[in-house]
Length: 81
Image (tube, rainbow, N blue to C red; front, side, top):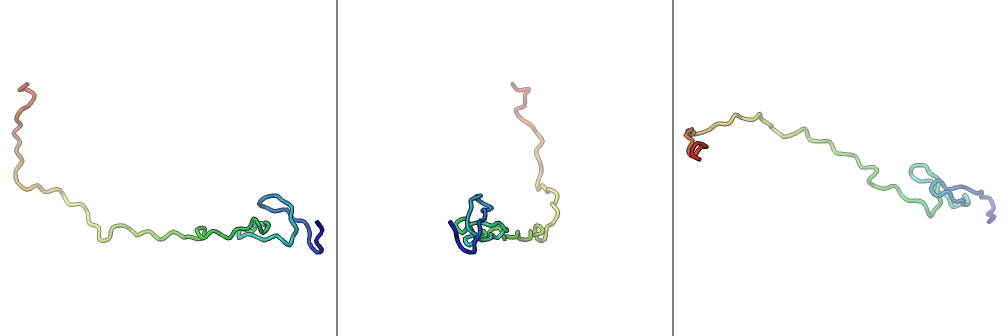
């Protein structure tokens, strides 16, 4: 269809032919028809937070300390079978 002052343009998204008056640029620079245009998604701009360096006031592991005696007597071994 003829529209005075407009020319034919091919959409970057669909490949369809439209008049130049109905075309728009997307946020990433693609030329699309008004019906194909979408706003920029908000999560594209998210930036990760800085990570914390680790546990605050970390200390090295202390050696195990046993209180009392350990009974080394074994009863009911394999010899009783």
